[in-house]
Image 1 (cartoon, rainbow, N blue to C red):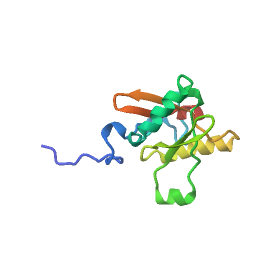
Image 2: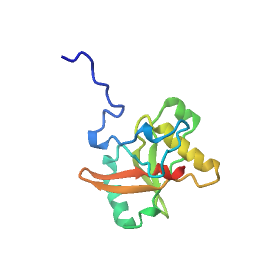
Image 3: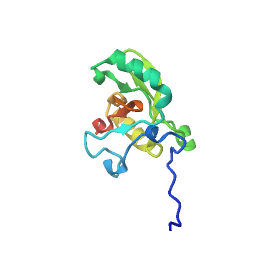
Image 4: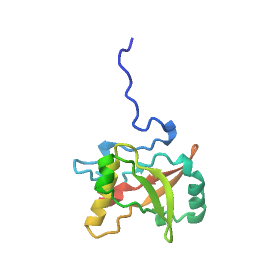
Amino acid sequence: MVFWRRASHPDGELPENDRGAAKFDDYDYDLVPRKPDVTMRLAASDPHQELLSTLWSEVGDDLDSLVTATPARTLDLERVDSPIEVRLFSGRSVTGAVGRVPRGFEGVYDEAVRRLDGRGDKPRIPVGLVRTKAGFRVNVLIGMTR
């Protein structure tokens, strides 16, 4: 007999296959990825399947041309704890939102963008599109920001 409740997921309103994926074990104390192959799968990408499908057909095999186009959050947005919606830059234009950073990992994403900006690089993180049974998903290749 179990007397405790199972903790709810922070993105509990989303379908289980669209909640995104990331692990805090992949980052050190300063929120720097431990390895260059660390990825973060965006949540809430189901409503954006048409846009992702168009990107998939336009970009084709050249997935290296896709990067994030979302700046670091302002202090006002951090204070409210709003989710970070991610947009992509496909070489010539910025897309609409394609998903959002999984709840709880906003600080990791924000720190990666600030780290890139701080060392003089463009604050853009490479991404990869993945086709799954549930549709297209966006993997942020956050390990490449080390």
